[in-house]
Amino acid sequence: MESLYLLIPLSVLLVLGIGGVLAWAVLTGQFDNLDREGRRILDEQPETADASAAAAVSGEEGHAAGRVLLESRPAADGNAPNSAHLT
Image (tube, rainbow, N blue to C red):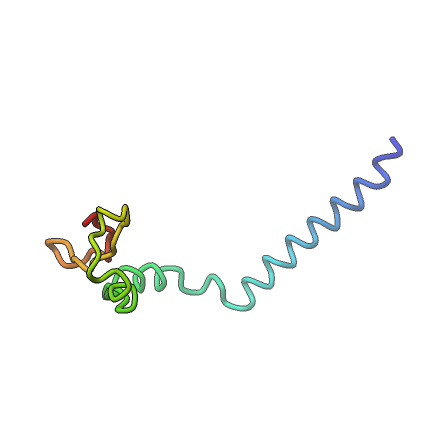
């Protein structure tokens, strides 16, 4: 019974904190346009492989050293991001 004197105020503070975070998110526009970011990720052009990473492994056989080299190979439809290929 005595633990309720501690647990009830703590639970009220927790609910008020969660409500405050939700109110902050709504008032600052976090939920305004949820579809925009999903479309932005899908519409981006794939980035090319880092030139410095390619220069670091040039002249070495990737499979002999047990490394996975990243290559920029778009899929047949041209929409896939870079993927790792064993070389």
